[in-house]
Length: 250
Image (cartoon, rainbow, N blue to C red; front, side, top):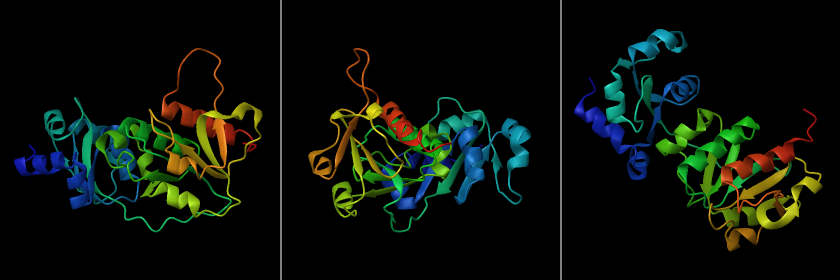
C-alpha cells in the first residue's frame, strides 16, 4: 500500500509549480511506463501491479527498483480513473541550448493551451521523425500529466523548448522558410513543399499572435471541401506536416 507521504508527493506533481520545484513528473499507464523504461529518463519511483509484472517483467532493466501496488493505489495517487498497470515518477530532462540549422525542419507552437492537444502534437511529431518542438512560453506544459498521457510515450523521443517564440524566429537566418498556418494562407495542395524550415501552429481559438505572425514569411492553409468552420489544431498539424513529408521519397 502506498504511504500517505508518497501519495501526497505524487499528487503534488499534478501542479506545475511543484513539478518545477521537484524537477519531476508523473507517467501513468502501461504504454507510457514501458516507453519510459526504455528511455534515458531517470526514474525516481516505479509502482506496478502484479498483472503488469507478469506481463512485462521481462522489460524491466536489471536492477530497476519497483514496488508492487494495487489498482486502487494507482488511481488514488494518479490522474487516471482506472489504471491496472503502473505509475512512475521520473526526473525532468535538463535540456541543452536549442540549436537550429538552416536545413532543419521543426515545429513551432504558439500559445497552444490544451495539454491534450499538446500531447497529441508531440505524438504526431514523433510519427514524422521531428525530434524538436519550439514552444512559446505560454504553451501547455510538456510535463503536464494530460500532455504526457496524450503523447502515448512519444515524450521520450521529442524535446520541447520553451522560449520567446517571436524573438527566436526573428533571429533565424533570412533564408530559413517560416510557414504559418492561417485561413488566409496559400493552398498547400498546390505547393511543392520540402521538409525544411519552421512550421508555426497557432492558438486553438485565436491562431498565431501578431508578434509571431510578423516573423512568418509564408502563410499556408488546408483547403476545405465541406462546411466545417475549423479543424482541431492537432488534426491540422498532422495534415500540414504530412504534406511536407510526402515528397521525401519514402
